[in-house]
Structure formats: structure tokens, C-alpha cells
Length: 323
Image (cartoon, rainbow, N blue to C red; front, side, top):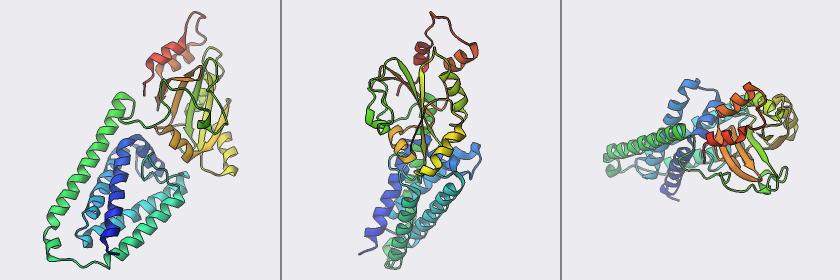
């Protein structure tokens, strides 16, 4: 086996990983936050730097040239990602590596195995390759091209993030949870079915490892006790450990129904930043928003019970971002 059959596919996968982060920048930024390695103000620059690094190293490998430089860089990058994954698991009990955004969800164990296999394959490829004068002389142009690709991918990631912050929706949304579509029973593995529900329901998607999710519980408890507002159901994503599920639910101090799902399965369903809320009317998704509650909901809770003629849920729907 020639070293090209090793380095080119691995480089292509690194570029694919950077592209996946472009599709869902908020998911990756949340993942970086869960690692607890940088301050909140540095989350965006750190995320952009990772995408640029992946694009640069991936392109160096994909070119199949100058392996004496590309392979050590790739091994160092993979070792860095491996250490960060282990730290994230130890500190925040992360359930996936965040390698491919929300596009492909690898468990921590799968990520470790893949990284180790790639590192061993790259080491073997490095010692099976001998440089030629032509390859060494073109090193400058290869580095320039790889650097350009890295910068373009980083800039695309930043653009996708800015787009989300401005429009409150992803540039490209692959989630099946879209406004106007009917609810499907299989989405929650039969644990709850809103497809035949009558009236309005709020379905709130949270992750146990999401630091910005837990403050929502107080608001959701208040909504749950308001008969004039929709019924509320929380779907909580946790790591696949049955013995931990009861503790995670108890820690929320929720006074409303909580459905527990595996975190990776929930991420594959939602494919949007957490926390996320859906408004359903007669089993059809009417509104969707993420990260924060609409001001109309908070104002309604602060003002107390509305008059019978008021319809606060209609006001809620007007302020929701349509996905």
C-alpha cells in the first residue's frame, strides 16, 4: 500500500470535518464551550482557529505531497483533538467528539479509536515515503494553497455563525423538525406522541451537558403552571447510562413531564443549537426558536394571567424565528 492511499483519504476527512462545522457553527461552539478550556469571550476565535487548522492540515494531506511536513502536523493535530476529547469527557461528560458537527455523531469511544487508527496509519505512511526533489521544491506552493483553503474554511465558518446570529436560523438546515411539518411518533421513540394532540404544546429540547439549558427550567416550570399557556414537555438528552438518567432528571428540579433520550440520538434529531423549543398546534409545528425565550413569553409570565380575550400564543408565534 502506497502512503498516498493513507494520507489523501485522511486529509479529505479532515476537510469534510471542517465543512460540517460550517453547516452548524453553533453546535461546534457549544461543544468547545463544554470542553472548559477557553473563556466564553474566546469561544468564537478558538472555534474559527480549529476550523482553519483542520482545513490547512487536511489540504496538506489531500495534496499527497511533502508528507515529511504534512504527516507530523496531522499527527500533532489528531493528538490535540484526542486530548481535548478525553478532557471533555472527564470534565463535562460529553457524548460525542464534535468532529463532524451535527452531521455525524461519533461517540467518545469511537472518536478515540478513529484517532488512534489514523495516527498509526500516518506513522506507517511517513516511514514508507521518501521525498523527491520535485516535491521538496514545490513545498512553498503547497503550503500557500493549504493555508488559503484553511482561511477560506475559517471565513466560511465565521460567515455561517454571523448569519445565524442575524437571522436566528442556520444557513443550511437539515433537521426534520421544521415549521409547517406534522409531528411523527417515531421521533421520540414512542415515549411521547404529539401527532394526534389537540391544542398547543411546547416541546423543549435540552441536553444535560448544555450549561445554557438548565436556567430554562425555572421559566418552563412557570409556563407549566399557567393554564393560559401551552402544555410543556421537556426532552432531555443524556449520555447512554441508565444509572445516570434519574440523577440528571432530579438535578433539573423540573415540575413538568421530562422524557429522557440518548444525547447522540437527540442531537441527530434536532440538528440545531440547544436549547431548542417547538410550538405545535394540533400536532403541526407552528414555530421554532433557539437559545432564548421570546420576549412575549417572559413578559406574559411577569404580567400574570392575561385577560380572557387575549391570545398570548398568537403573539408568541409572530416573534418566533421560522426555520
